Image (cartoon, rainbow, N blue to C red):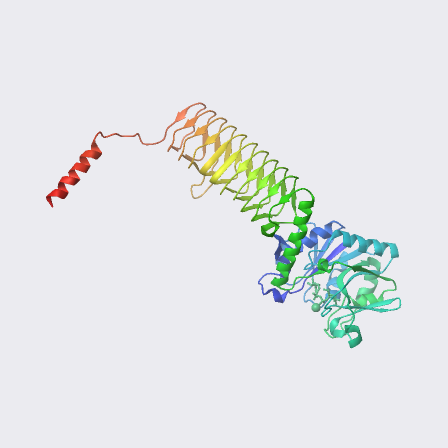
Length: 452
Ligand code: UD1
Ligand code: CA
């Protein structure tokens, strides 16, 4: 099967500078929900039109795009992708603004289509309020779809409507697409007119219409977000993950979580994430595109583009940025920021630290207030810290610089030169003591006051 996604429409009611289909649900653009669904079934093509360049920038490399300009209706959209259609394949039509269709529904549609050797199989549903939808008009075996604006009084009463999702035989499409006309109430080329031209039409009635709900405005966007969220959290809970407060938890569709992991309230998990077993995530935590092992604790923190191994603890109030790798048993504490840094097994940075472009060995202790000065205003430079080193509090490590294995850096040092293994480095002003100085100052001030 091949999958053709229609995404050329305008989406006026979104009141947006951006095309409708790039608006996100649970952190994932709508069009990518549909593309990923389509990819489960075969090669994917997308018809783009309105703000085509922006939509294209969201699509993976292996998806073909077809430009529809101007947009003259759903039938015209498919005509624009004629090169994508092959006589030997079935063509599944999806909409870029209908993100919550389930793979099971497509399977059922495709099976019904194949079994009946149909020209077209239409996914339909019963609408409480069918306004705006194409009506499924049955006359014995004959089926046609009549658009709302073209329907007569009798047809308007029909509650079975067209979802806009179909499987077509490629051969039937190629032979009949050019026969479509725009001689109708909207002056559009209706894809739905093909149904009347077909000699074998099947329908599959969907009993869960939310799957084919489209997004036309931001109210519907939020409604579908809440449906998607409930669906994903339910699946996670039934698979062995504890979600303490589903209402305040947001988990995207590409997140995998192991059993006995607990997700605390106010947690947002976006993008591609794998989390192992027995972890505690949250409260108040946002994680994006990261891989997390087993028995990891992340509290009140921001994590993006990080790889975190087993038994690590992070936070509260940590920020792990792109390229952070935390090996086993690392401890990252409050107000610690890391970027493009690998931190070795058992090492700790517990307080008020910035580690950027750093490679840190095992069993290293990074004291409170340590900063890797990795940027001179022009370029970034690396810092490396050997196994077992101890960095005293409030030290500045001016990169590029190497701290040897087992070395100690005295608190408050500014380190500008490499430190050999097992050495002590002090880079600070020597302390001066002036005996009784404070007392003499006090007395002098008091005498001056008496004279006034
Ligand atoms: C269409 C169906 C209608 C069905 C309804 C379900 C037709 C003629 N009518 O209605 O029977 O009940 O969907 O929602 O097909 N698009 C393009 N290019 C165009 C026009 C539309 O790519 O020129 C895309 C839109 O971006 C959207 C989808 O096709 O993703 C459906 O378009 P929309 O205008 O919402 O559907 P209708 O034509 O109103
Ligand atoms: Ca329309």
